[in-house]
Length: 451
Image (cartoon, rainbow, N blue to C red; front, side, top):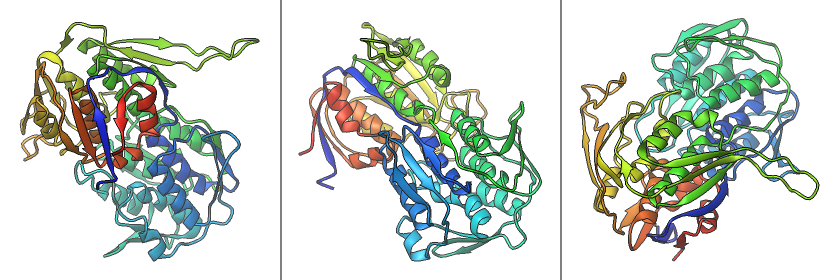
């Protein structure tokens, strides 16, 4: 792990401008959707992150030709020669990503069978795939579990169904969408996730020829079609990365402009950011004119000086406060005066990163009780999923080991905000979701280096 370490000289406010590209939680799903088309698809603003590399590799194994387009960040997918991949080849990717489970529906439509390896992803809770498998069986798929993974087939084809999710799972909603669009008949999905990335995926599928209606009360209706064609799409920007840089600006008492960030998808975060005491300004895009190159719009985030305010927040499915937003923001909350309360209702093991913050001088207590009124999946269960943060705390440097993607960026923010020099181990994990983050840190004036 000696090569996978970043030395961070903290105590310097982040100042400057960076840009976010397409949302990690949409781009990889859009790449899978290209499997369903009978003609090439074109996707723009694709970030250079590890999850994209994993999906690109899996698509290549299944005969999809993936090439770089003319524009930086453009990928072209040609699915005209979709084929089976060997179990050994697919297993090379086992444990590296959770995206392979979403290949099930498209591969069943294209080939009549699919193999899915053991799934990886961040260790923030079991995140079982039971919802996925139950939905696939409802469509008519047969699922055989083996030691190396899942073998699926659809001997009688896939057929529309009525299905209600026990919880509005993003992954299971994506599974249903990618399977239902070419299943025979009509599918009705109740208690669906309606995150902006889900709506953008629906836009992509609609461009391909799908018929999808989004009703009120988390109901999505999909009318199956016999064929789909390719798409051309520019995805929504990554609202998680944008919020992470906003939290970094607040924690380091800095000023960061995030080009590409969109207000509409970040409203819940922006409200909390302002309640804590941060300031922001939405900057509109300026089109190029003669003698003026123009400028992309975004959001400027900064610490206005003075003390930050303690807040109480609860994570929830959209339109609630996103679970991926809480970890970076908690670092800033260690600098707020008073007691802040964070109730995590989405993942049961997402507060483990606070131990590292405490080792740096933070004062965070975690509890098994539900410290909030939002319906919680973990009430009366043995999970420490609520946190009380007492501040402000002076953070000092420490050696940190990154446990997962979002916690990793939080550890990085803490090292940037702390006095002294920290060593952050496992930073390559951050590349799963944050494109070129070291160069962005350099652009913002951070003092970081590889040893």
